[in-house]
Amino acid sequence: MEFEDAPRQHYSEKEKQEVFDGEFMPHIHSMYNFGYRLTLDRDDAKDLVQDTYLKAFRFIESFQKGTNAKAWLFRILKNSFINDYRKKSKEPSKVDYQEIETYYNSEEVDRQITPDLRVESLKDMIGDEISNALNSLDVDFRTVIILCDLEGFKYEEMAKILDIPIGTVRSRLHRARNLLKEKLKSYAQSMGYNKA
Amino acid sequence: MATTSNPFLQADGKKPTCMEMLQSILDGDATSDQKDYFKQHMDHCMPCYKEYNLDMAIKELLKAKCCGGSCPEDLVSQIKSKINSSAT
Ligand SMILES: [Zn+2]
Image 1 (cartoon, rainbow over the protein chains, first blue to last red):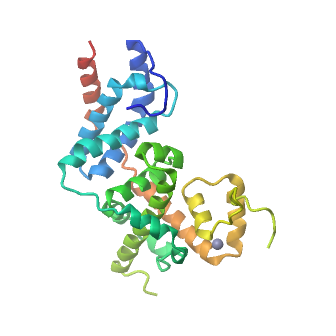
Image 2: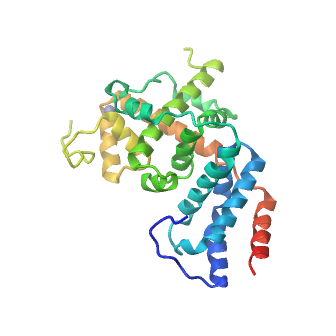
Image 3: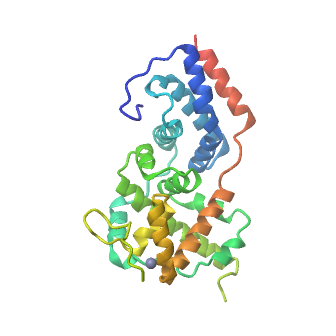
């Protein structure tokens, strides 16, 4: 459960409560949103977040006061999701990462494959289109978009949260953005934009 | 084309592609020098200009629409009570 190679901390009960209330609890709304975007179910999200906070409290001495609590919590939540939740659900991981690396490295995809989605058509997406598009992505792609675009994590933080190399974070983000654009493009088309 | 040195140049002297520059910007990894350089680059690279505007619009839309607001009201109290009952 350790995040950095931080030495084990020793906190009094009072200090534990202070760290928990002062450094962990402020992230509860982001955590809930992350949980919801992973499970796509509000009750499951609640369980996942509760479970994450209980674990965080149990392992609080592996957390060094004043360091990146948000990334630490996100990592616990992500691991709980994989180990406890995803195991129960039947959703298999559909992503072939070998394929992604090849895709990312090939020269001909240097120019985007979706040139005809336009900023103007996005302006009309005032409903749930973007949210639905995000939710429809495979969970591994969804996750990097959430971490980067919604939560503003840096490559290094994402690499630690997800236990993957920075290069993989980059290529996954790249692929995720393209997939999201494809979805948005088909929404835009079905809404009757992009015709002119 | 102004020839200020390219802050995207990698240690091995490899010149980054348009897509690589754009991705650094989008992913929030670019330094302010790199952002300035890319702004100038967009003045004479139409594909980057268009892609940048589209990608940033998507990013803004995501932030506006997918950040979910608050967690359920009872969640905080449930967590607190579980922790208090587990603490001796
Ligand atoms: Zn360019």
